[in-house]
Image (cartoon, rainbow, N blue to C red; front, side, top):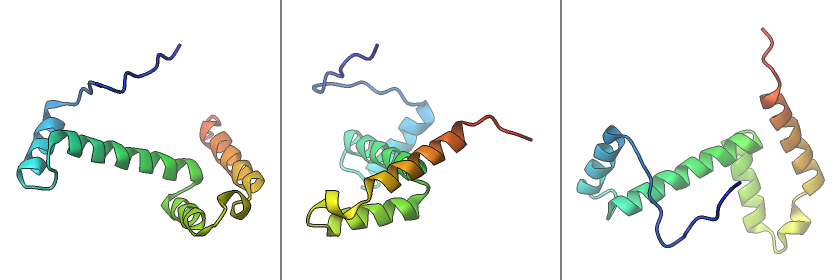
Length: 99
């Protein structure tokens, strides 16, 4: 069972190497704080996961562009085709490997 996350404080564990890398990036001015750096890395992870789900970064970018340009996104994106493709991709990824 999933418990709701307390949004006021979340603790994340990362390896010592990753922590040192993030601190070095903060020290170089890439991020204002470790919190900002970690948030940026999590956002990047979410982007990669979304790209993986829809079949690649090009498809994700095309979808995001279409949504941004639409006055009413529900009329610009064919949900049936989108979810059919999404399901097919997930079924393919979950199918036992043959070889």
